[in-house]
Length: 170
Ligand code: DLZ
Image 1 (cartoon, protein in one colour):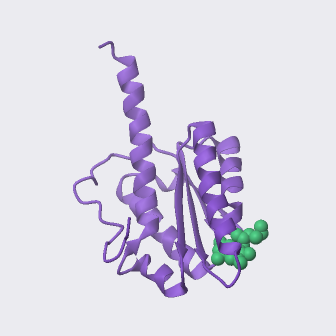
Image 2: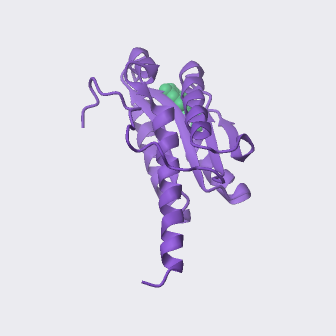
């Protein structure tokens, strides 16, 4: 689906989820740091707006996006968060590195989430150039960090609801 002209951070009507008590890991790639720092700021702001306590946000950095699934796996293993958000920015270069990194990170996040049942959120920009990345990190196409944080909250909320429903005889 094309995201042309779409602000990826608009979640009107869905923003009332109460995230108090949630413990959320965030693993951020240092590669393309001026972009990933902005994604991180967006994610932090969205988590705090929804009630996540600062002390319940577990922040870690990895060298590049390729290391995000491994970083998330370590956070899950050592800290048992409710969800982990992976933030990165992969920009297409002249070689096929882009394809290998993007696909590996996407697969790694998906597989880790399915294996652990801890939501692992893919907050990674995969763009053709630097300008496209900037537009999706606080520019005219919103901030993918916000979107990733809200996705994490919604997934943890879904787990909470399932637990409540399981405890209630139908
Ligand atoms: C090597 C590399 C390249 C070429 N491009 C990016 C990129 O655009 N975004 C990113 O997050 N990381 C990049 N990396 C680094 C890899 O993710 C990884 O850190 C190294 O290949 C070492 O495993």
